[in-house]
Length: 102
Image (cartoon, rainbow, N blue to C red):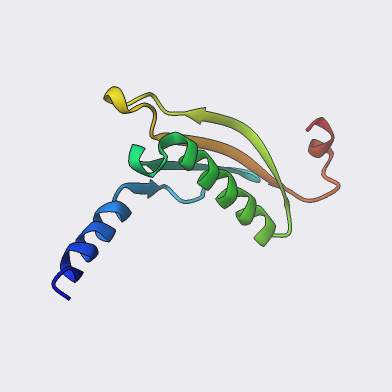
């Protein structure tokens, strides 16, 4: 039991190493999402996976189709490499003419 406070502190510390803007509406059917993960948690690779999964889930919840518009890895931080990833995407109804170009 004496190690419990140390374990709790570590979990809280690691949880603070991940951040997300959540899905932000930036226009008609268009959204933005930025995720950041500490290098120890996988950095931009993990952030990309999380952002893509969150965006796809957001569109699915609306009964729409996910379409990536732009994807950007954030600039590296010091010697640790990139820690963030930004995704702009659309949630379109199936049959939307804009889907034919993707």
